[in-house]
Image (tube, rainbow, N blue to C red; front, side, top):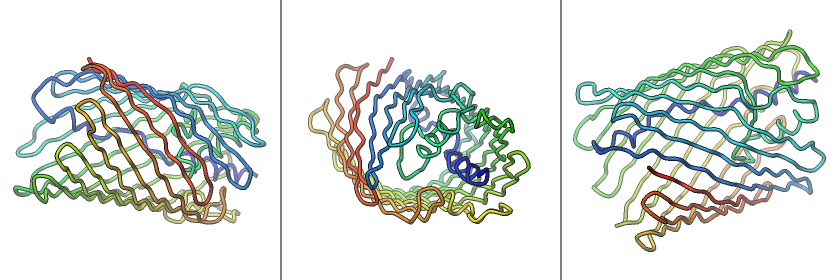
Length: 360
């Protein structure tokens, strides 16, 4: 049984700690505002009569300090329930990121450090763990897929530089320490996830003044996971993303293609591998935003998602998402956001909610 539980833990550890470069901070010499965002989302999905739903309230704060330093904080509340599973509710972990910008020749360097503080619930009952493992499956794309995952620390460095009049290149590296924690209250052994080294490279080409094309590649080297007497080599990850961006006056159209795969791991005496605990993922998406009035935008999105065979969900599946994301500027400091996305294919469901953005 512990082997299957380990697959569930592996599947919930796929989301990296956010330490990306806050490019908007350095887009101009003007003072950047403090930004606070809060959203309320309800998601519900049905698969052969079995339901899973989540109500979540994500909260984010962005605090620039001059033009060289930025601080951000993210946390959330979530409640997950479903057919034949125990309801799990509570606060998630708090993620804190500090970034420092420094010009370097014709380019720039960003140093970041992210910390995941253990504030979410982690020592779950077996029934609660079943709910958490189900919510952590990437195919459901829940806004809050996990609650508590122990301490994490992730320093990172990114260097970006021009390579001609229209081409920019970037390189990055990060290291993520993942501290041990107790996922189950009935099993005293701590789960100790392995560290990760992430290497990234990217390029952006300005095709003309109104369009650009970018490519990003990343390779994650994952350390050994340990739980009691079991050790698991989770396999390395490869992610490739391509994006085309087009501006038509005040309107914007973005098209994205993404591929993510994990190499075969090594778990003695088990019938599944890391490839089926964390299945291969392929995404195609088009996201368009139309400015209806100076204060109102209407967004429309369409996505196709494909997931390979999973030890926890089963056969490979394909999902289609279509939705609207309207937003409105109320004042210079206040904006309202909303979204409704309908999902169909391997299973069906929807995401609906709204939010508030404040700028100071």
